[in-house]
Length: 509
Image (cartoon, rainbow, N blue to C red; front, side, top):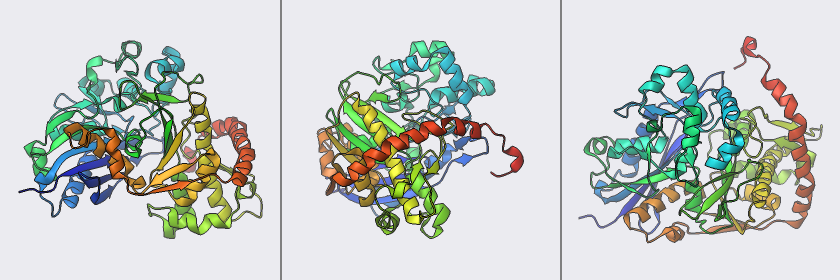
């Protein structure tokens, strides 16, 4: 007889698959993580075999359930990497490796979309900002360069939806993923006829959209045999990994914000307003209820900047997921402002608010007196400045009432810098590094009735850390932030020039 009831949540990202087994009271029972990576080439393509996701999911299941009865898991739910493109045939078998969100092969298609439809129209219909990271230009690239594959494609789908299909035999998606394909009508809550007609994409090649939290069914026998779950376990439709941290952090009311700091980083703000950013640089997306939305902005390189610095210059720390020890050793030895050293955090181009694939990283203001500690602090400050610019842009739509900090980059040192730059109290919690799994678990619990509503996310958070801004630091950052923004504009043409130089003969990749 099973006495305990568990919720299993998995977060299937581009670089790892995290699993957390929760008890129904919100306690973490066990967790595991499987790492992998996309494949890259010298043309800045990025792709991944969907078999990696399923293998990692199964490994996680068997690890966290090593001595726990499978039938004790009442429900499982997933969040997964977004904005990718996985074509499957009529039997839902992959026809091509998944094109990942950071793949740049479709830059030509982005220009075509802008010429045909226009960035303003895309933003008005979908809430998203025109760029190569979304699914639409990837689909158009396949249509142009792989016409036979496009013709044979039954559906273009996302990561979590493929794994859900293997678990249940049901192939559907939800609004969080549909909304970032750049094909979904945000306020109409359906696939956009206008965009489909303008781009020539067949509507029947897109999956059905169901509400987040929909019960998809029980784990089918074939999947149970492979992953070790029970056929009694229910599978609930989860959500994209860009939205899961917001749900997991507990933000539910207009004005409440969540800053997620991982390899990339973003700020999300709950709103009841349909007002759009007039510059078409801030996204708007669906949220937990039909009357709620999220204003948001993402930067491509958040914790990745610190990872790059550590890997390049401190290999003894490389591979550590927790940056706290490294930041604790270096940040206190450099003053606020890094002695005037500014870091441009554009290691993969940039999304919000620039939407510039040619943007590049760099250090500005370098002098002979700067040392390794100054470089470390300037990286933390540079990422924080970029997030500060996004926060100010969102505030043009609606002010923030609070800010949660989540993600693996959630260290006390970085939290203080963010509090000083954003000029507000910032709250983090003990589940910051697995908050996406918390979000998926809450969706699962509400979906099957283990939790009454989304307010019960509070039971998953057991301790908090609150950081308040330091007035002296705020004054310094108020002076540096405009200089930081000026550097982006001053280097814009230079970086585009550098991006157009043919380096192929140098064999430096």
